[in-house]
Length: 252
Image (tube, rainbow, N blue to C red; front, side):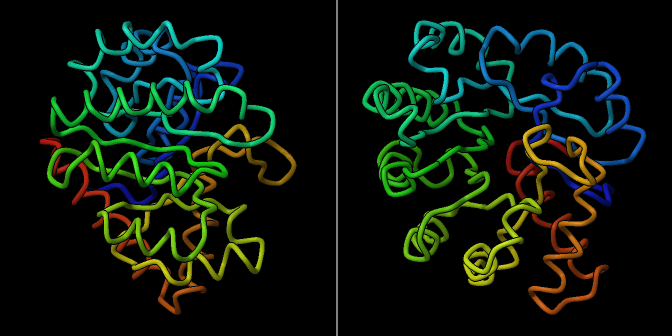
């Protein structure tokens, strides 16, 4: 894995031009995971990324759309055999989505079980106001060695973070997380060997515009300062972590 920068969670299909967004990430040399929110978006994302060197597509069913899209879980299961990456999936207990929380748990449990059965999947997981429940379901349904878990934009407690580390989880960090004392304190206790970077673009901004994969350079710099490492050391660490994850799923 020779990529210098890593954007492990980005919604390229929510940019104005998906083809251009993929081409830009590829040209910038950023290993980019473009996540999807519904299974219906998966075929086009897969088709457009299949010939790239550094852009990968993830098969998702976002918890925020589960109330309207839960019926697509069967379609998600149909596509799973051709997907190495899974996301965005998980739980969201924010007030706007809490009414569907029980249904979200049912869907997420089903996703975890199917991933465990298949083996070798790499999941990018949403856990807004639901970290403990997400970890409960991971512990119950995705045993060690049956898949890699990456907690995207993690905002749980330090106790949740330590438990996640014990469960073998990785964490994808974006620039927004480094802007607050609470975020820096949380990231500061995470082992370097479990860190990846992300933008979550276009939902985050950089210089007043939607963040793009190349903007993770700023996050790498912030992590280097936080962990008192050189930029080269932090970059090498993130690349090593990425290599570990993708190698476990059979990708070189």
